[in-house]
Length: 94
Image 1 (tube, rainbow, N blue to C red):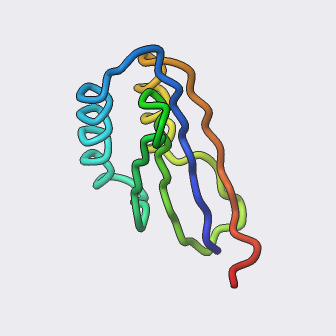
Image 2 (image 1 turned 90 degrees about the vertical axis):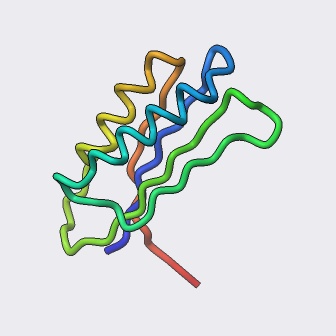
């Protein structure tokens, strides 16, 4: 099963360098746990303070939930603003 963990940040100010450094540091620590297949980081095209981090996984588990990496990312990013953290399961792909 494929699943996607999304952490969205709406920052209260422009902390591009700090956010990017925190993301890099936390992603580097993923070696000790279940690693995502792909990590994508996006910044909104016109709203420079909005970020979206996508952690792509594939597993045989049916009971997916937030990963340790996703939980650490969400907790660390709360210092920069509002954070939304969710898990999505792929149901259809064309």
